[in-house]
Image (cartoon, rainbow, N blue to C red; front, side):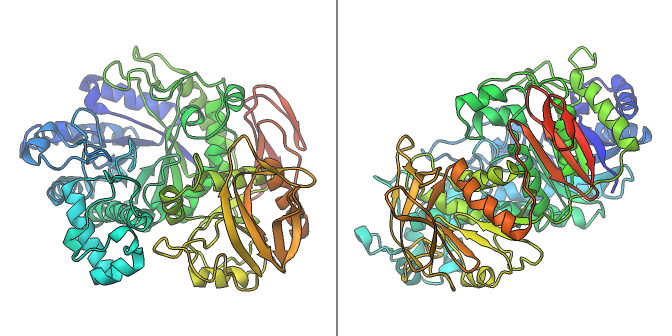
Amino acid sequence: MKRTLGTCYYPEHWPEEIWEADARRMAEAGLTWIRIGEFAWSRLEPSPGDLRFDWLDRAIEVLGQTGLKVVLGTPTATPPRWMIDRHPDMVAVDVNGHPRKFGSRRHYCFSHEGYRQESDRIVTLIAERYGKNPHVAAWQTDNEYGCHDTIISYSEAARDAFRLWLKARYGTVEALNRAWGNVFWSMDYLSFDDIDLPNLTVTEPNPSHTLAFRRFSSDQVVHFNKRQVNIIRAHSDAPISHNYMGRITDFDHFKVGDDLDIATWDSYPLGFLEDRVGADDAHKRTFMRQGDPDFQAFHHDLYRAVGRGRWWVMEQQPGPVNWAPYNPAPLPGMMRLWAWEAYAHGAEAVCYFRWRQAPFAQEQMHAGMLRPDNADAPALIEARQVADELRNAPDVSAPQAPVALIFDYEADFAWTTQPHGAGLSYFQLVFDTYKALRKIGVSVDIVRGETRDFTGYRIVAAPGLIYMPQDLKQALAEANAPVVLGPRTAARNADMVVPVPLPPDMPGLEVTVSRVESLRPDMPMALTGGGAFSGYREELETAADVVLKLETGEPAVVRQDHLIYVGGWGDATALQRIYRPLCEEAGIATRELSGGVRCRDTDGFRIWTNYGAEAAETPAGRIEAAGVLFEKL
C-alpha cells in the first residue's frame, strides 16, 4: 500500500481568498490527505436550525480540485454554546461533582440522550450532504475521545444509564449484591434505583462498584461512536476512523475500533515525554528534543492492532506544542524520523497537525507547518523531504512479529481501580515489558485481550492480566511458545473479587500467590545475579522450577514447561534477564542497542532510528543524530 502524508486544516479560521493558495502549497509539498471539519459545528449551525454548509461545500471543492483527499470529521467534540442552553444538563460532571463548563471542548456527557440525539442529527445532515462527494475519501468520528479526562462523568444522566446497564448485566439486585460482596459494611441494595455513582463516598467505594462503572463508561463511548458510524455508513462507502491518543485508557479502544475501518492516533512525542511516559528527570533531559525512543512505537503497534492492520497518525507533532509542562522544539530531523518510524510499524499515512499556526485562542503557541505569517516552518521543510523519499522508496509493511504482547483495557480498568501502591499502573507495566524487548532489537506485535490464537508467535507476554477468563488461560496453556505471565495474573474474578483457588490457578502451572505487597519505590527487592523487583512483589508457593531468586532466597520467577510466572514488577535489568534467554531459546535474534537507537523489521527492510542527540553505530552502519537508516534484509 502506498504511504502518504497529510495535514489538518481549518478553512473556517482563514479568509476564503487564501484557501486555493493553501491547497496548492499542500499539493506541491507532496501532501495527500487534508482533515477538516471536526471543530466546525458553530460555523455550520450558528443558531439552532440555521444551517450554513455553503462555506464547507466550497472548501471541499477547492481542496479536491487541487487533487487533495478530504478526511471529514464530525463536529460533535465541540457543541455550540446554544446547545448548552437547549440541554443545560448535557455537560459532564467531574469526580467532585462539578460540571465541566462551556469555553473549551469535549463539554458533553456520553450518557446524555438529548445530546446523543443532537449528535445523530448533525452527523446525519453532514453524511447526507457529503456521503457521495468524490473528494471526501475518509471520515473521522468526533475527536480524541478521552482527552481532558472526559470519559468518566458523574452526572445524573450517567447515574440513570448506569442503573440500566447494571440491571442488564446482573438481572437482579440480589445477584449484584452477591457479586460485589455488598454484605461488607452493610452496602446491600434493595433496588437498582438505590445505586449511586462511586464518587463522593466517605472513604474508597467498593472496588467492584468502581470497576463496573468504568466498564459502563467505556461502553457508553462505544455506543456513542457506533451511532455515528451507522449514520455515516448509510450514506458513504468511504472508510471511517477515529483519532485516539497516547496513554488514554479510560475506554476500550479495541471495542470502538471494531466498528471502524481505520485506527488513527495523535502523536506528540515531546509533549508526551513530559507528562505521559513515566520517565525520570534524567531521561527527560536526554530526550527533551526527540521524545522517548519507545513511546511512539508502542502506540504504533497498539493502534495497528486496534485497526486490525489499518492505521494512521492523524496528528503528528510539527514543532513546539502549547499544553505540556515544558514545550521545546524538536531536533532537526525528528519530524522526518517520526514519520519513517510510523511507516516502519505499518502506517498508511502520517498527517502533521496543523497546516498553519493559529494566532488566536488556546493553541496559538502550538506550531504548524506554516508560521502565522505564512512562512514555511521546519515541519513543512521536513515533510517535503519525506514526500520526496516516499516517491522512490519501496513499500514497507509490518509482518507478524516474533513476540506477542497482550494489552487489555479491562485490565487497566482493574489496576486503576485497585493499584495497591502509589504510581502503579497496568499501562506502565506493559510498556516496561515492551521497552525491554525493543532495547534488545526485537519487534513486537500488541494483541488484544480477546486473542485466543497465538499461532506463529515464538513468545507470548501477558503481564498484569488481573482478570483472566478460563478460555484465555486454556489458550495460553496450550500455546506452542513460551508464555510469560504475572504479576497479578488472574488475581481477581470478573467482579473484582479475590478468587479461590488463589491465583493464578493456571492449567499446567503449579504456582499459588500466597501473599502480595507493594514496595516503596526507593526500596526495591534485589534479585540474585542482578536486577530487582520494584513497586510490587508476590510471595509464591510453587513446585515449578525456579528461574530467578530474590536475594532473600525466595522464588521470583518460576517456570513449568512453557509457562513462566514473574512474581513482581521487574526493573529493566530483571526484564532483560527474563527475555534474553527466552529469545535465544525461541531462535529470535537479539542485539545490543544503546541510547536512543531502535529498529523495526518490515517486509524486506530493517528500519533503524536514532532518538539520540549524537550519531551512533549500528550493525547496519553509522546513523546520524535524529537519523533514519534502511537495512535490506
